[in-house]
Length: 351
Ligand SMILES: NC(=O)c1ccc[n+]([C@@H]2O[C@H](COP(=O)([O-])OP(=O)(O)OC[C@H]3O[C@@H](n4cnc5c(N)ncnc54)[C@H](OP(=O)(O)O)[C@@H]3O)[C@@H](O)[C@H]2O)c1
Image (cartoon, rainbow, N blue to C red; front, side, top):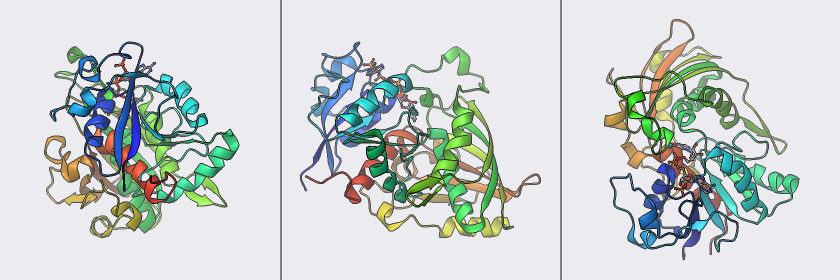
């Protein structure tokens, strides 16, 4: 098929750059426009951006002129890497002008009828889109990716929920510096240190899994009945969020049974067949000291979950460690996979 033209909103930031890099050779999408704030609009992209990725900046995008972030772009799909405050105002403006808005921002993640998507977990939640369009009276729509820290913890929660029933979780995250964007956290705050608070993050970890694990019933989404207590921390790691999770189950399971459930899990066929889908979505490591950010964040081109250390929890039932790459699976790659799902489901038309 010929490619679908797309725009990246806030293309100069940490996540925006990831979109630019990942979409450069995408089989279904091609970047037709990049946008920024008043600071960069009107400049050549290559001159306006402080490129922080090790991969080279794609030349075709370097030569684009940064557009103001306004809904007058000649594309059907926009990938949003806007900061939350700007996303709150601008994403509905794009949806009401008819765009498919595929966002990483937190502004509408928990809004009723906005699908919060991970294709491997809840592809059926896109059924909320017609309801969103009807209730908001707009021809376009918004779909959101979860927070990068929620992403790292949630796939084993989903697998255990389906296998044994999940009733409660305690989550402690160790989150990478790049999760705070660029320039993000001051070196004086994070070198030789751990910061035990990330504003708003505990609440996202406590709410978003209930939506991701929710079930569609009569066209509505019913949130999962699940109590979660979360502590988010920032650690001196460049990329890769690690989550330590303890879970209470409905049906008792031994660590061996839980590991077997993780190893046996396969993503739904529609997710497995998407062009960016990794060959192995969940990598289980037997070594006691894995997963580790530096060693495991690039598994599956940054789209795989690496899980290990499933053991008995003396307080709840079981515990585990899970890791994902925060700007890839937890942000740009996850959103691109969401857009691929929308194409595969016929919600974004192929040209
Ligand atoms: N970093 C992560 O791991 C991660 C993971 C998941 C989700 N997110 C979410 O993704 C979004 C972007 O995060 P980030 O880490 O990329 O932040 P960042 O590095 O601080 O980048 C911010 C971007 O927003 C743009 N911007 C600021 N004000 C704007 C405006 N009024 N109109 C248009 N663009 C504007 C900036 O453009 P100029 O350069 O043109 O000023 C810049 O491109 C946030 O909502 C964040 O919560 C981040």
